[in-house]
Length: 331
Image 1: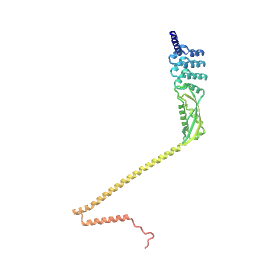
Image 2: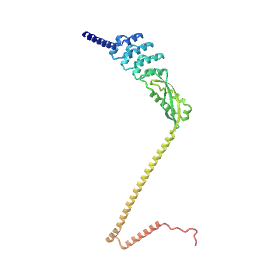
Image 3: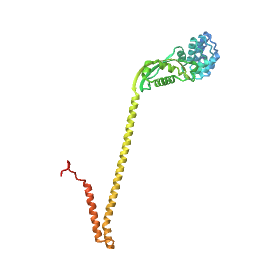
Image 4: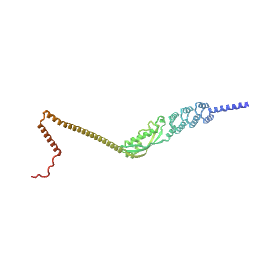
């Protein structure tokens, strides 16, 4: 009974040891590499396990690259994997570039991948150019007419500028800017409608792909629509603004005139009050003159006659001159 337990315990130990060995030494992967004539040692596979590298993600792309005739080492692929790159994607891009006879070293391909760009898509775009459609660009000619233009930009990826180069949004923005500049320099919107290809020629001549990850092959105007009369609207708005300014100034002058009128009325009322006050002092002054002997009775009568005569003349002047008889005079 003890012998059977000992044999069972040894069998369990052997199974555990075999499982640990097969985990650290992927024999199937090693055999596949040898069959594909790829030089990968058993200790290299064990080292990958210890460095927390999945051997399949290194050996299988290495086999693929070797069959495609590329010279790629295990250390390059493992270093790119540890840096967080997509090894399989990089190898596919290298194979595609090799088939298309596009010079693409492994270091540049790895740098493009680590920069966050799809290196395989970039290689495919170098072989098969991509068409980028711009949104509707609104531009105004010198005569004030708005044109709404849509363009299609054919671009090809520039492998040498993929790292650090601007992307598609920059291309779209620059093309839109070129369209606005070209239309804005046209005297009439009909000039653009007659020759829309002039826009493409002018925009292409500006070198819009400088500093970008693409090479612009062509710019084609897809659609041109006539929009609003911006110039007329601006003139209308300006006239409305001028009218409001004039109304405001007129209202200001009216308010000033009203204030001046109120001021004059107040001044007149003040002067009338002073006159009334002065008139009320006259009887007192006359009485005082009588008491002091400075004014006699005859002097007082003469003063009253003068005052009556003055009042009569004032009344006649207010009544106006009576109408003269019309027609010829008769004796």
